[in-house]
Image (cartoon, rainbow, N blue to C red; front, top):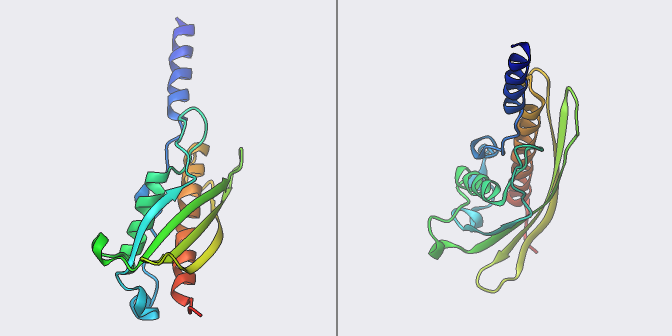
Length: 178
């Protein structure tokens, strides 16, 4: 009888430690102060055309950020800052993002994830480069944020992507084309 309880307990522990993918709502960047006036040419002018490099989460391994989730977070962040075009006909700039990778720890009380993303903003329809950059952004989720290591890792992934997108938007708004 004790073996049965032990097996049930181990199964419950294993299921509670499954990795889950990053949540879109936790990756969306907030509004940058002065965003609409920082670069008026970009107001409601950008369309996300391609997002690559993400990975699906294997529940038995580690939390990841997939292309669809990263794309949704990027589009939500652009909308928050009034940079997203209302429809495809309003696009003056195409945005491509390539998630080059997430540097993740294997274990730890405080987990720092660093995201590396290559962004390419091109004029439409010419395709001429407007702004090209690679952004690196770390984020640390602490033991106080979540007891379970798999949850801390997911939170660190989400925070790193959110910080990365925020940094990209800040740099884009400060960019002065030549």
